[in-house]
Length: 203
Image (cartoon, rainbow, N blue to C red; front, side, top):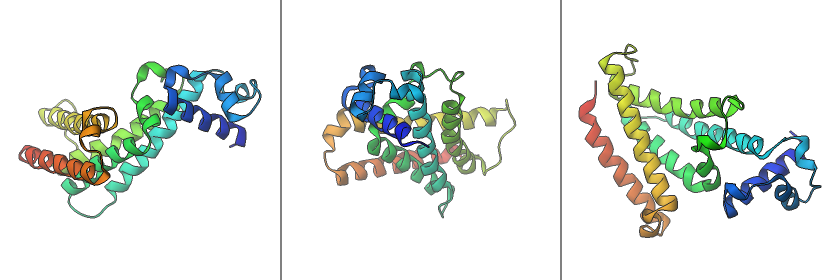
């Protein structure tokens, strides 16, 4: 992949981090990247293409983190907790990417299927881990009550970790837990309580 393409993407992500996605323009990206104002057009026809690439890359990196938790040792419940921790850690480590990845109005997934495919890849480990934890790893028959229960549990787990990440990144929890140690302890405690609370829903 060309250095120019990487320069454009790096400058775009930095601009989004500092001023938000609304400030993104190819001319400003070119200025920050130190290239001619026409240079970004060699790789990206418009800013949605840049955002789509950043979203796809963000989901790919998140997927890699979550897939690593699947390969960890231990019970499914422990690996599910590790996945939750990895999700929140990604958000805090890559806030600019996280803030655009879950905004479907920014990227037309039909026009940029790679972004949708990467999102599906990141979602899949959660489904597999929840299924392993709450259904012994056996995927229930589609349309059955058990399948609906798994789908609900996936949403519950996702909502918890996404809410934690958002509140720590942009909400009151970030101010309440100012140090990394305090933040990590709260994340761990919250995930532990939630895991115990949902344990009764197994199978």
